[in-house]
Length: 141
Image (cartoon, rainbow, N blue to C red):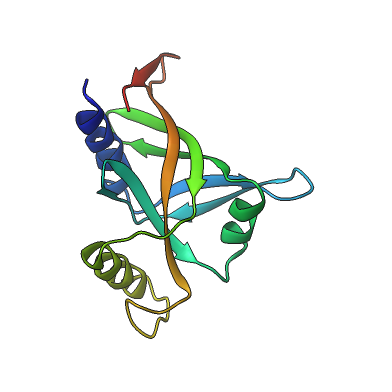
């Protein structure tokens, strides 16, 4: 499976469910899991969005390693591990899509250019498609 096909597979898992879950670790080593729901591919990388005012963003600043998972009914679940690259290089189109998505969730933003709205990409990704039989099938990223 090519890099592009692998990214599309992961994107399909993440966007086919209402929410998927991203785990970070705070400074004390306590894991935190929270729902995310926006994902997009740009420049050969997966991108997510959040707010610079949220705990998840501050946790990723201190420790960029995270893990995400989503269950796709009838297909098993995906596990995605990586490191958050917090340099926001979102295209105008992705910024608009993320803004529209977050507003639809009920979040309040001034515009797609709101300085609090930030996008981060997944560096050093590793992914597996897992099944209830215990199998972990690697996805080439």
